[in-house]
Image (cartoon, rainbow, N blue to C red):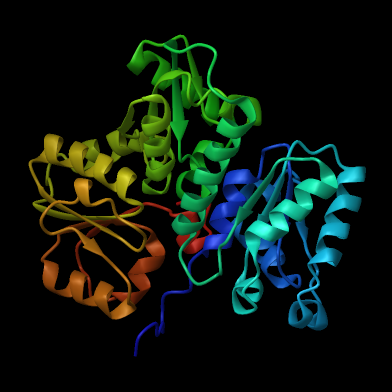
Length: 356
């Protein structure tokens, strides 16, 4: 049966991915729901919410609000919230409710902007896709907003590098302690640049067209990078350092005596490909990449797989002949017969785990 899960739980949906992009920016984030979706985002899908706070609100839609399409009530609520919170923008994120009643996002966005005078981003997620689809729409909206608000860049060729696509749903470890500063320092050394922007602040986002290059660390940020390249000619490279989330050196040293011959890596594609390259260079193993989320065709190699069903995952492990799997330990529940080595690679969007 399509979509049937007996062992593996559901993953973070698209509205959670969109909220993750906006979470630490100084805006008002409104989840267009009755309360449940916002509760899931803040309670389960946004690890930064556990130790800090962000202006994430539920629209609090009641049955008749949804049935009658009372957009004026929503706009009034947002305007009142903006009177109490110093927000630089409003982001409205969709859920199954507006999808079912066919909410006109563009019209609602115009109403909110007229009422508040603030820039507005409307993200038409519907709760049925993976978190990466929500991130993709949010990154594109964020880039569009930065371009519209700042206009044509006054200068170009700045010796700086931007990082697009870094969110805790894919890189939870990067957001703990001083890791973000460590990532900036590592990229600065790699690129030989003066500064690095991770786009966790709106003023950083406005520099996206000025940087020398953008590093795309997740497939969800590729459309935003393409937009910047087409609009301003800003080049981008698809790359990330696996050490941001997995200490590979320790594991490779431990496996030196018995290096793997056939490996499967499961995560978001850019990170998984980074791990593949290191494993292949250091061990000579044949390495396949699989992901439960979107994959960029240009990065795929023969043997790579997009997973959709639980049974597909079981069959892949059963028939693949792998002697090492690098994936979230939660996935091992569905393949208890697997007898090879397993390197735990937590994926917060999949299991909600912060530590191995």
